[in-house]
Image (cartoon, rainbow, N blue to C red; front, side, top):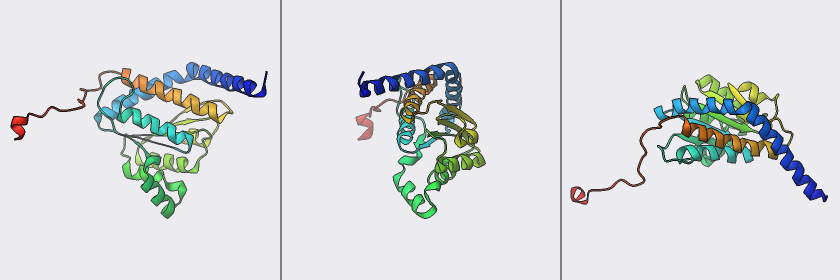
Length: 208
């Protein structure tokens, strides 16, 4: 077997093992998180999300599914990917330091009862830890998706879903699957209100 093929088999095996653990221990947790989102978002609450690098892409993927839709039509819900606020990130990083780029946004946008989702393969990113600390002071609930325990972010969060793999790629791939399961559970949690039509018909007679 060539080295590249062996490496590919190892990659698949690593993901297989991580998903097995996710099925055994993570599915009930994701169902609880979805139920909580179902309580918060339809009443005007907000999900804030952040990560660095690949985890930033994962966080933004989640918010896009909530503002848009996952599978079925439903109302749009407030979900903000903090790292995507480029002007805020660069201004805060320049004035206060990179460690504060998420914490200051949490202080600005977060309200008691909102949820902060933080994604990190290492669980050691200072800017995510600062965001978790600010969220706790502000009254947000903090959820984390990380790599293996122990890590500081899992300890700082109210709840953490930790993927026990040494491979960064495996952790990120498992996080994406977990996020999709979270969205599936959210949509299945119950009626989410009336669907907002894509276009609202206009009575031309009334408009003239």
